[in-house]
Length: 443
Image 1: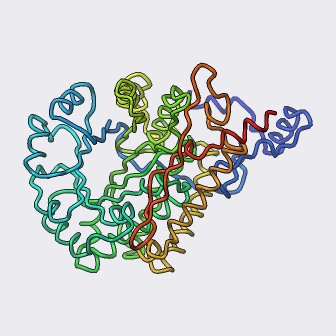
Image 2 (image 1 turned 90 degrees about the vertical axis):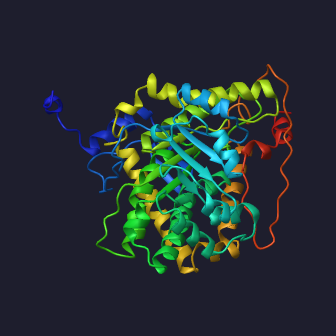
Image 3 (image 1 turned 180 degrees about the vertical axis):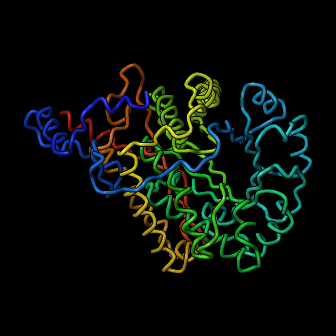
């Protein structure tokens, strides 16, 4: 079997193009060029003889992943039930120690993965729990959500020192994707986000190895299957470049990468399509190499529907594991010329944007000047226009809306303001669909 392909003659790129033109029957081969995101152009075909593009290995030592669930409203009974049904990753919001101990009674943390997020630095420093729990005190993300810095760098340093046995360098890169950032923007801003943490810790005497072992990066998962694969592959390629600036001889050890499906393309209209969206999104992050997957359910305000959506969200990663067996493959995208060319293009653009932000004083300075927020807003506008002129399909919304249910009008969310800078919120593209424009175009 190792000599199977030696039985066939190699086809040159000219032979490929000749066959492609014949199959297109006179149509331009430009119809095989797409733009998955703004300023990213990719062909549907690539040949081994084309310009070198490098390789982007998955960078993960294991083939499986953690099925993680994020809890807003939770009870101890619900947690134990979810653990019995296949969830092996808990994401909890901290209120106080007594409440946490009650919620997690009977949870065997040594057999699962768990992360706890804090909004108060003193509470984070005082938290008592197993060393296996990942602690999330991301002061930059908390500031971006509110539009003001509520903590100082010293607060994080105290937390880092007090909780020295836990992983504590949590980087909420997903906040950029949730707000409407492109893949290039999310990768770049996540690197800037990480660099703020590294710089602070190095300046205060921490070693790169100490920082490295505590890193957990969470990225959003959006709608484009191959862009997601590229994103999760590239984060492991780009982080070592940031460390290299501090010590060119340091070899970055494997760190945790979390994937969380975005709310961006979840829709209230023809909502059954969300199951397909969430499934392909989860697949793409798994193929890209994430260590943990969180599928966010749609929230409608209808209790019965929301319970169904929560169950579907919980079961999607389990089906991908138990029935699709994606956990048995080390790197499903390895050898794909398409993915490698896409990675090369996104990697270069993300690294250039990262350097641009650093030249302007780093991420926090760019946030205070609203540079980051304005760039993300520009991409949101691009996505909204693409939806409304139908160059971007949102199934069940701008194309093939269901005739079996009444149309649900969505009110545009109010733009929030912050006391120091513009905050970042959650972007849902359906909120900006102009149905009346499409109805008028049919007249």
